[in-house]
Length: 209
Image 1 (cartoon, one colour):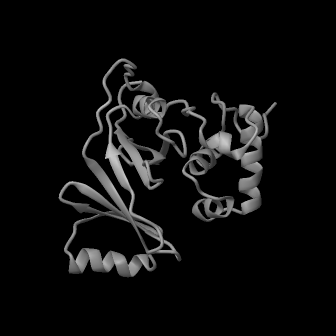
Image 2 (cartoon, rainbow, N blue to C red):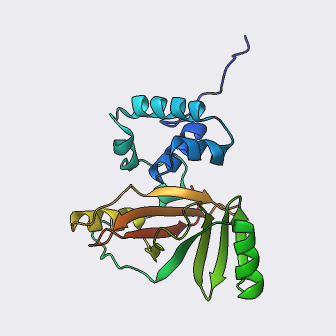
């Protein structure tokens, strides 16, 4: 007999639920997630409800701080030494909000002459001598502050050590993008002593399973 329905998954969440989960941990609303995924806000709400039940978490806020990693992620195979000293690396990225991403992409590329790395919808990335400039379109552009992203070798350890030292994190480390070559981009956002946004970032390259 042919089995109908979706194929079983050997992970705690389905691939679609993982994608919603990472966007929730990134701080996006259901409406913003729906726009990013090309689906409805009701569908996202349904996914979030299922995720909370599966993980046994009481609220969306608890979900943002859940530290689980999807099965097969490169970060899960990264060697992890909890005794290793945490060192904040160089600034890897600076973000800025713009009102018109197409106009900003032309200006930063043609006027400033910055090498364009890649774009995704209303997001664009440029190289500034080894530091990545991240532009995102927003109606409230100019109202927020730029975010400094610090590169770290082990984002899970850095998150744990800094949180233990009193840093207030807004979310757990989460994957924001997987490049075509399998390299994963992971981030975790926190506040400085005056409440301004900072972030940890790490690139984890795929290796043998």
